[in-house]
Image (tube, rainbow, N blue to C red):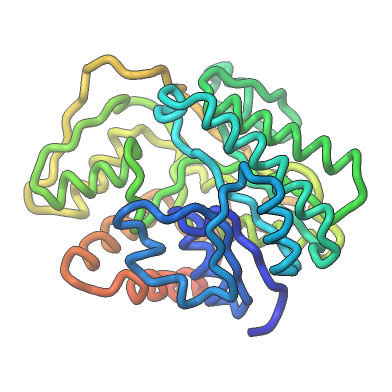
Length: 345
């Protein structure tokens, strides 16, 4: 292995597992710090622990344990993704959400700051940090943060913490990445659209959609992670500090219903969905990012549009459901992705 050694927090989660594989495909050494994976998670099913220099099980709320782990690993780059990532779950466990997403981020910021080997640190937050006024135009990095639900509030707090640490202390080059809804094979989280659709289709059931006409920027997980790595590479070059929206191509701002229709068509057979008109916690119905800064300043663009992102997600699920090894399917998609030319929009 050559190149920088990456430490990924949250590596046992959906995005973390794909980041481990993408980094290895690019020739990097990778270590991880996280809780145990969820049952059936991609990290476990693909045996990704076999690809790691260090596979650490640590709760990021434990500041001393986090500092000792980062010091022991001696990474060049820290990518902080560990979080309680679900809006609906944050209504059930608001205090745990705040402690994990805010205090946990503080602990990682301090650990990275006090470890001399760390040259670059990327803190991942979310598109939901922005004060949402219900407009169609995407939000830019300069616009005010603000949130309503406990999850979004916790991530806005984490975002502000990272901004404060970047301005207040000497330490590694520090950036914040704000991404939106990512999709891709192997996500087993509850209350997420594509995993819910895949579970229903596999079981031959009609999927239930909570907000079919909400608009979101749907992005394949590999596009999102490629954006993150573009930022870390810029940080290592002494540029790239600050806040960055990592958003998808313009054709990816579509309704939940359109995603479900595309997924059902790709799955075939009797795949279908219907609206769930029950009572649900409040969620934003319109939310989009303006990625023009990263496109202009770092020459980054998505490689997959909305149709390809959904198709790749369904094709991954169908391949694994037919008995293929999830690691093999994932690396095949990564190889295909790395051979694609970024879009021009």
